[in-house]
Image (cartoon, rainbow, N blue to C red; front, top):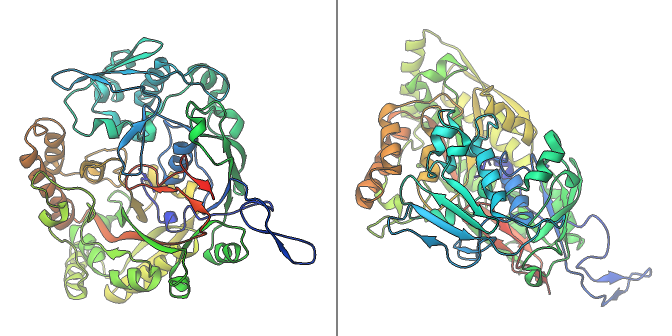
Length: 549
């Protein structure tokens, strides 16, 4: 997910801080003379985001901002709990699973959409077929390829009616899989698997998911107000099946692009939680509300092999990948616990069948090495017949991303003689669009995992994959990924070895991308906020169990 799909993405360096657009909220009130009174705290959570929501259509969403809001206003068959395990959602009780693990039957609980319509099994069948219909052009359709006939449907070789999902009646959903998938229940928590109300979607036409009132909700909250590029407001959904559990009455989110503003809001008591950028970490690290959270999110450079002749050259890509000091980014610009990454599947993310973390088995690739970078660069220039090379770096427009972009430009131009890096900064939604259209050369981005398996990172880069978006292709890599999704599912040790080998090909052999760092975040949170879940996979935050004490 997280484009960050996730998909995902440097915008997330500042994502999900907190804010109150109006007065009152969770802070103590002041009389006109300035004396504090012990006004009762309201159950209103105050957040900020660095970017607007690109889409509230669960089928089309690809980014972390959209998935965070969807996770709190919508609900699939399951949602993630505090341990990132599947817990109660629209499915009631345990599913009925066939002996071979390929057929699952779910009972849909008595639940309603925010417009009063019942949630039915057809809502899932409709949404999943919509996602896989090639006319929809959903980037995340591939995450459903475990469903029977899903890939053939998505490629137009079979009709959506042939997909292995069927509403047997209003309350029974049958799902057939191509192969038994050990992480299928957790996979179903991901946003693309959420239901949609067919009647409502049809009525809204091409406006569905673009405004608060052109979207209908079945989750803990509804999107009650959405002023684009300014703010959005979520309110408790009285129609939600588990509304008694939901303590928050409202979540106010203001779009704020710089950390200084967040800090000012926190200091004034108008914000409940903020993420700190480097210049504020040392100042606030002794504050009682300060904490670090390591994530399984990787930031990297995409290198589009279709737009610039130099990027088709593997030596040029290796030179770029090794030609900048990663610690300068993590230790100085970020200063929040983030780690230099010489890998793509993160540390402390998932263990293999031997009980070891993936990184204990996988190697380190494309380490910072200015001398090797220069050697590769000279080979590349000779092969290209050029002494001067210019590349354009696509970047986000928030303040931390700007600093990272300028640092990369300075490092690469210093270490790689004859290279000029021009920076193109774009708002979040426009940057995602340029990547989707492959209308860029090099792009600063990131990726957060959608489920607990290395595949959520590795299958991004199969030939013509929806999130490949850079023209990379390697038949050996493709075969390893395909085998890991099919024939090796019942041979976990061999599957693990195949995924380790695939990462080596992607990085050491082909330098298809340039890993930069594994993200950690530094936060300040006011003590009266309790129960914000921060997830390792899927959406970043859940507020179903949050309250103001």
